[in-house]
Image (cartoon, rainbow, N blue to C red):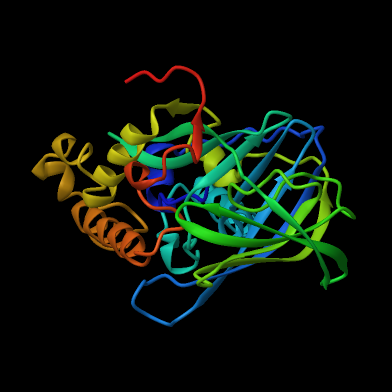
Length: 310
């Protein structure tokens, strides 16, 4: 998942050096250009690069923005640590378009959908598990998608009709977002209304791959996920979107809000207002989600994993 928490809060609440450890895993990273319609009533389209990292036992899908800026963030945070001052990096760091991270576990393709919220002064991962059963209809129609020989397949998911092109040249039964289950990697997929369209643009090996970005390391969030039923997940995340600082505000008195921080413009209260606006602006950018809310999904589309507990 993309790191929605600004570098200000990462530095303020977890101003400690991350311990970089070399990973022995090598990932196959597939780059997808995602073209999407953020507003239901608008013809305007936006584009973002997303990545699907595939390792031996799982894949990780997310917006590439946070991953691609990792080295820049590391340099900036280490400079702040050395100088002992804070710096507002929101002006130099680009916000991702999408904040979710989706992990598919092989071979059963049990899926974990993850978002990040604030719990007091501590960021935390929340998520839900599911196994999506796609009823793919494979056609005999074939085409060249980029440099790959591909074959057509169709399915319904999340209230939309999808057309996918998969390639057996790439021996992974996976794809962007939650899509999977075809006899090769999905190299292109789009819904009938062209609200969302992913096209594979390239791939490369990533030696010493680490699922965590540097920003995630310094925020001390780690890989731990608080799992909950999807209904509860959506309510928790929607509450966070409505009031991102609901759990922080009661912990901040007037004295703390009026304090200034060396290297930062304005008071802590000013920075919190700025942060809150950034959050709300981000969440208001898209009112055309890939999937409808859970309660509107068709019965039978999703097979719940394990016994859910509140």
